[in-house]
Every structure is written in structure tokens, then in C-alpha cells.
Amino acid sequence: MANELTLSNLSPAQPRKDRKRVGRGQGSGKGRYSGRGIKGQKSRSGSHMMRAGFEGGQMPIYMRVPKLRGATSKDAMPIGPFRTYQQPVNVRDLERFDAGTEVTPDLLKQHGLIRTVKEDVKILGDGELTKKLTVSAHNLSKSAREKIEQAGGIVVLLREPKVKKKAVRRVRPAAVEPEEASVPEVEAAEPATEEAGS
Image 1 (spheres, rainbow, N blue to C red):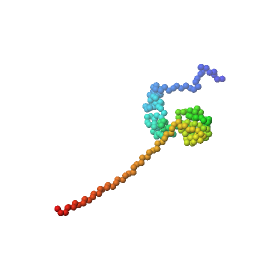
Image 2 (image 1 turned 135 degrees about the vertical axis):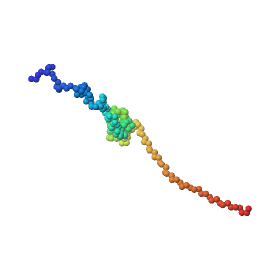
Image 3 (image 1 turned 180 degrees about the vertical axis):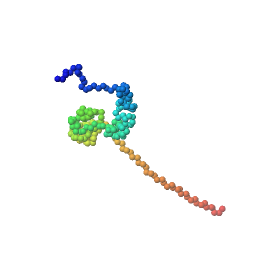
Image 4 (image 1 turned 60 degrees about the horizontal axis):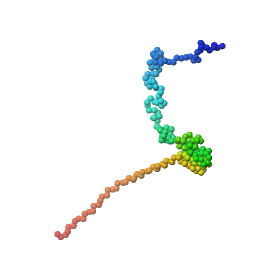
């Protein structure tokens, strides 16, 4: 039978090991540099608090590589003018509303079709629509507009589309060849005739 556990025979499950007391003299085995090596960034206090992506002061990789611009680029910086997003809603999702309903972004948010009303909504033409609805959105695809209007519905744009300015081509005037210098014709002076008989 195992001995009864008492305070007199109580011992830890794992043997205890004293922590290393660094910087407590040469006899301790961890004196002088205390395991930090000689000089350098990692021997200083706070060296473990460098932010992610820090490369010791040199130009970090996210600034060295080229940035891809465009509406759908993941590297577009800043997000504002270069990256745009429109929440898609297909016409098949509008079939759940009763005929005559005015579909607005607030109503779409209420039914869980979009996540926020702070971003633009674009109606896409996937699916079929058989009900007459008044659809208010920021943008619509050509097929979505046709299907809504074929069902007798009305489309209301919440933001007027930007009119693309046509590039004006400047026509360069054709190079004019220098005209040949015209020499004015000098009429030959008639010889003066002396009057006969003086």
C-alpha cells in the first residue's frame, strides 16, 4: 500500500529548478554580458519591442516593391480614391419582395441582403424577376435594368452616373512649305528720247 500523502512526504511532481540569475558576477556563469552577447541592437533593452516589418532601419520590403494601383488591387494605397467597392445584389434576390414595393438600400439591409448602407449598392442581372418593383440603387447593370423594366418596374438611381468627357484631339496644322521668294519684276525703263531739233 502506498504511503499516505502528508506534509512530511509532499514533493513536487517535477524537480524544481532555480532560475538563472544573470548579471550577478563572474562566478555565477551569467555575469558581464548576461547572455546578450557583445553590443548591438539585441543587447539593448526594448529590442524585443520592434514592430512587425521593421528591418533595422533599412527600407522595408513593403516600401521597396511597386504598388499596384486600380479599383480591385489589393496593394492599392490609400484605399480611398484608388479602391472602390459596390455591394452586389442580384435581381433574383428581389423576387422575395411583394409587388409594388419600393426597394431601397435600407430595406435591403433589413432583409440581410447587404451589410451596410454606407457603401454603394449595385443591382446585377443574375436570375429572373416577375414582380413590379421600384428599385432604388446607386448603380445597375444593363441586364438588371432590362429585367426590372420588362417586369413593369421602375429604376431610380441614387447617384447620377458620371459623364465621361470625350478626349478632344488637337489637330496639328500641316507644315507649311516656305514659298519661293518671288522676285518683283522690274519694268525696263524706256530710253528717254531726245526731242529732235533744238
